[in-house]
Length: 147
View 1 (cartoon, rainbow, N blue to C red):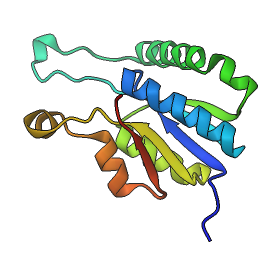
View 2: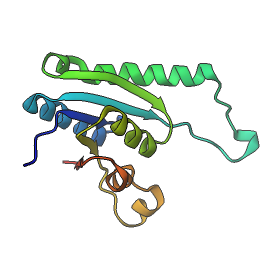
View 3: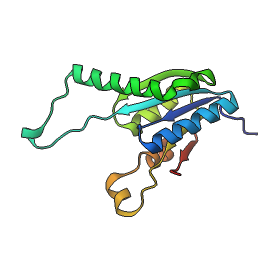
């Protein structure tokens, strides 16, 4: 018999798709009385042309993380009245790796994340974080498609 998830990890990239998935995860956690952990990955863009390269020092990275944390907390807002949350996690790195690692660390029963629903050349060129996580996650992954 399958038991309902008690620990859910929601990943968001602050896009409309990520926000929709976060709302879905909040509603699901509330309905199942599950603990909800939320993660956002800050990705640092690198530029190959030396003259255009920007070096990220610790202060810049910390500022990016803090800005993301504030944005994430604002999105959680009133949901704190309905759901028990784990720590809000804002980490620097590849979202594919971070989501998998954090899911394992917290013992997630389910990952909820958005998908942009790209196909064809756009999918080939941009890749899919959701697709990668579905293939490598230590637990089931629920992808929330755009409306």
